[in-house]
Length: 240
Image (cartoon, rainbow, N blue to C red; front, top):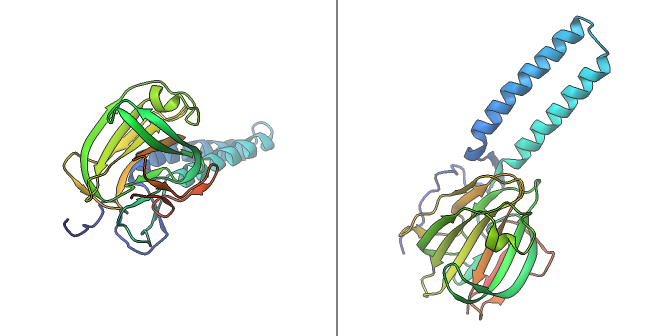
């Protein structure tokens, strides 16, 4: 495999440095402009002594709090996986484990696989990382419903994108990005034929979502139900 190339979204390799994700620029800009107009109008009305002052203070406090939540949502920490990458499957997302089970995967593999699912709440980082090193052999997007992402039927019925990676040892791993009840946009950067590495960005899901990993049956699962995960840091499994 070729040497790992610089990531397009990361320009500083210092681990855990926080940046804002490029997917949030337009949302943050438009929301900031609206916030500035509302706060400006509130300050003007306050100066004109129109209406009770406490109403304006509450409105400004709520809007500023909402904007801070948006800033938190679109943060993008710079991370570098510290362990050995050979045969390692690393968490593609921040969140917590909601499913560990053997399932029938019918979209691509058409066989039984071990599935590990990570649910991302509104407060989690929503950037997604490549879970293992290899070559992208399949990328697809499928429209669907918007059930709550932690429900079992979300894997098969919700809008989703699939990225299948073939490792240097020949195993194939699928990472499936799943939209949730609030999520309405899945962004996938991976392209078929592209070499990929742990630490690379796979994509982004806006506002509450889930990522499923489909692994070979003989993979050694290293996480437990309910365990918190850190994207690009938590070791999910080892391939045999």
